[in-house]
Image (tube, rainbow, N blue to C red; front, side, top):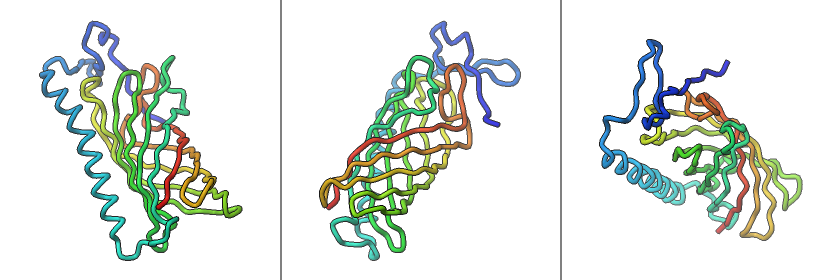
Length: 216
């Protein structure tokens, strides 16, 4: 059963994102300095993007990576909340990533995801694999699995960050040898309540991606 955490109704008095513990105590970010919060919001995305760039460079130089034009790709996608979790305000965001063939895998991928969920700005970094099951040369269904870390907006709630796993499927439609469209549907499950779900928080979520891939 999915565990959920309730928001403190007293959060409306200006202390956003308060959480009630088992003893009925409320905690919030009221004691934190705004400068500290803003610095975290600025530095965390930069850290994730730096790690993504480092991982992409490392994979690109891996000795068993396939050097053909179809092996390496940069991807950009619209991240869509399919869980309907946010009442009257669906989550929205984007995902960028790098993929390459690493024998015997079809693709080893690293991705960064930004998500705005009910005014909470969250960040995800993930490492995963993709396996292709081509129908034709142009149409390739695939499966994807991976794990990652989700960074929660510190200015919106006192909830902690946490690890999550991903399992999904998608399809790639190759338009040219270097340009493809793709769609993906995935189930995400976390070690804690990492996703806002209406007035509560849930330990799982369903998301979709619609995007493009540039091979080189």
